[in-house]
Image 1 (tube, rainbow, N blue to C red):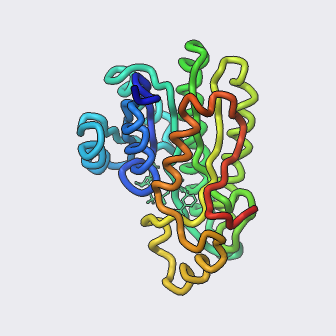
Image 2 (image 1 turned 180 degrees about the vertical axis):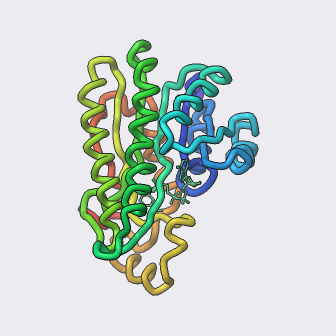
Length: 244
Ligand SMILES: NC(=O)c1ccc[n+]([C@@H]2O[C@H](COP(=O)([O-])OP(=O)(O)OC[C@H]3O[C@@H](n4cnc5c(N)ncnc54)[C@H](O)[C@@H]3O)[C@@H](O)[C@H]2O)c1
């Protein structure tokens, strides 16, 4: 029997990229996965190729009311979630002196506050059932910082602190929270980089290539499954050895 059989999962930002790969991987593991993204059509299209179009849900995770509505819809359709993967994330890169208030706030709102709204909402049910897994998709730049990404790095460092705090609060109820920190992964987010920048980055990766969304998804499947039942409050770096 697949190890996630009977589990209900929510993956945000799952219409494409890393989120889509995570949704596919958890579905293969036997879970029913709610595929959440900004646009209902895109979420339905993505879910059609995985568990069925009815598993696509629209939600802007930076809106706390929309997060409440989403949980209501998922609970009504699938049941109470056992697994939450906070993957939705955006970049608005600029050097510090040119970084506008709106680009600062937008990145923090989506990457950090979004994870808070959904985690708070799912935690109650998980604590009651004494079973739950939360995985937050951070980034290596949350550990190292990065020129031109003060907003993004701050949001991801914040997400790591959030993950560890939640892990401490919920451990006694057997609700486990971990973060995954990807390095450079081939998605639309990194497609925006210039070709020579990508080549320079690849040169600094010991494994000699950018990662794929599947490289990240496999680690998430491990963290939400039975093999990781004694792992909480950790940051698992998935970056081809770039940050050691
Ligand atoms: N690609 C990388 O190299 C890389 C590296 C480290 C971390 N990450 C993180 O991994 C996650 C996924 O990144 P990706 O590369 O697949 O990005 P992507 O841009 O390809 O996909 C992100 C998805 O999130 C959705 N989204 C954006 N804002 C949202 C919101 N407010 N509410 C709901 N959904 C929203 C988008 O519509 C999109 O489908 C992000 O958190 C990102 O910060 C990516």
